Length: 352
Image 1: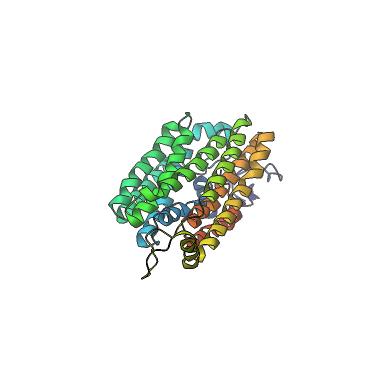
Image 2: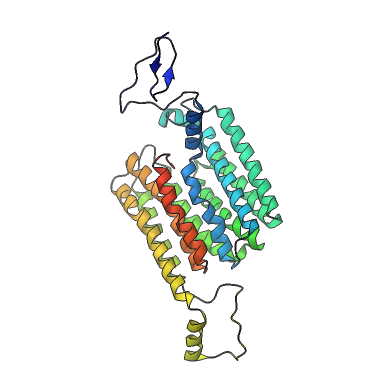
């Protein structure tokens, strides 16, 4: 028995093992080692995309004027589980298509069994619902339709015209989950959910042609959507004090110019919050503009995939901008800090 190296460099004790593949032709490793199984699961679950999830619940919380608490953390944990359930279920449902279009993916390459992926999707869904229940009945009321939307998208709606709408709805519900868990109310967070859902709808529309390329219309529409969302978020970045917080004063309300002057004195952080919102919104637009533009000029698979990846990463600065708009300055900065981490890990594991 000869001892050679597999394409990944691991020992291969198979008799008459083939020589090591040359650079550029190296197939995905199918070795049974623990590290390679971990790599396969990281690819299946698209782990770097997880950095785009916590901001949903935090933005929803900020929209209600409440401060994050333990129930917010439970909502974030629930979101992470449901998000990953969707990732596993996505590859399980698309395993036959991926065998033709993406044979390197974990399931068609044989690195993960389809049954294991389906089991993971079921377990993660159950865990997500259980965590939402721990955050209270309002949170579970939102998490249940969120889970149903995820499963409906992966099992049937994905390849229909309703697919992008379903994905946008799921992201909006994820934001509302944070609002419901923290404050018990979702109504104040509806505008933020609509904006975030619209961004997700645009990205999902572009992603439908990332494997084979196609028309320049989807990336052009996504570029226009980014410009519209940028305008809407920055236009509403100025306003009154945070919800639920009123200034304590023993004087009668002032009127006219005197009232405007007092308002500026009482809320010195208001201008800084507007500036932060503008800066974060600019970061959102900058993240997507160039890749969308390139995909519009040449909607080839590589450029389209790059545009989709940029759209996913841009979710984070958009969440941060929505949070800053609701006067959640510290939380907005925390969300924004997730962006470079997501970009760093995306270089190792693709988010698309």
